[in-house]
Length: 125
Image (cartoon, rainbow, N blue to C red; front, side, top):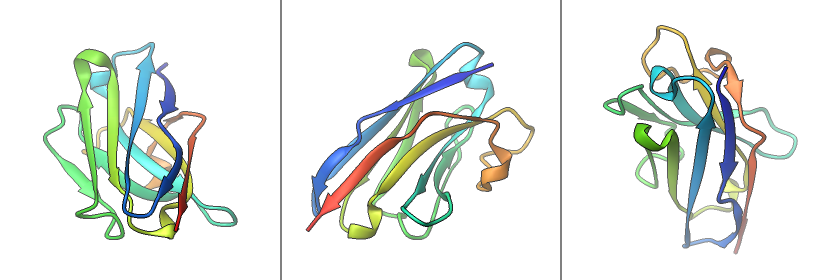
């Protein structure tokens, strides 16, 4: 089964940018849809962005559309989330997920079978 490790989180000022990286090991990564979710303190894990197996289809939460970009490099078993940070509400732990099902780029958290440990993003004003 695939294992996921996120990196790239940290402290960023509103107006800055950050790129998160999710690296997969074990399993055939290009056979998985991949996604980013986030969880703020006291809140449920919420969908951020997803990308299909070949990278041809992407979907975004309305709250990040136009600010965040998801991409993947299957040759490197990696998914990225480029974030242009403009809101304090972007503060959260960001998780990478992989889905082995038959859907194309699903947005529901229950669709994802495998998760990384998360990387924390803190936005300051």
